[in-house]
Image (cartoon, rainbow, N blue to C red; front, side):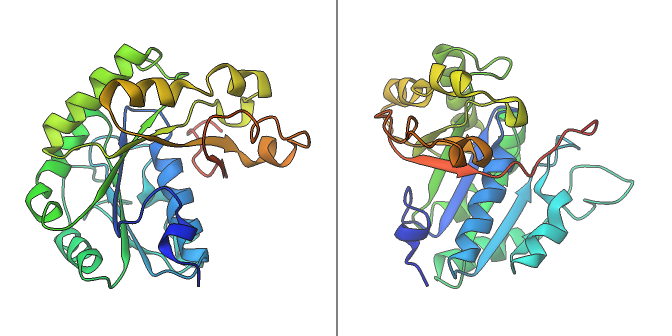
Amino acid sequence: MLTLSEAVPFTTERLVIVCGHYGVGKTNFALNLAIDTAKAGHKVTLVDLDIVNPYFRSSDYGTLLDEVGIELVAPVLAGTSVDVPSLSPRVFSAIERAQTGECITIIDAGGDDVGAGALGRFSGAIRKAPYTMIVVVNAYRNLTQTVGEAVTILREIETSSKLSASCVVNNSHLKQSTTKEALLAEIDFGEKVASQVDVPCVCTCIPKTLANADVNGVFADSGHGNIYPVSIYVKTPWE
């Protein structure tokens, strides 16, 4: 089994929170993070705290997670025809088990300050032990296309969740439509955001199809930190 730092090189904490603006790809990032960590031999629990947006939720990928042995903690009514804000009491248990070292808990928080408000309900329990709060940014998503916009949203999330950002992840791509030129054009976007809030940018996500085709090592040699190849699990309703 790989150590936690080897499996997830940008955090050493067992409690990991993934948040960000709507549509930046935080759920897809959380899924990749959970699956890669489980495949490295760790016991993983993924908590879906997105009770605002009925689309792009971790709850929709229960079968995928079950295949690699990941426990899914979802809103009580997720997956039913009734969609109202509801939180499972298992969330507190998942946080506690991460703090005692029983598992690695990854929380997929709702987008923006509204979604982060649900996270704030658990902030007291989260602050009892070290945690990593990852803020995902994407220069190709509406209302987060400039450094200033991304910083504003990050601060709103911190205020609403009552937690502090630990690091930034650059997820500036367009899923299956991504080109190498588009990736390279914004490959330093995460670093620019991170420098404004005095936290590190720990990785840049690149769709695996492009990363695998990068025979000349353009991305690896870009000088912009860790490159994290991701699978595109999350699809829009029309895809």
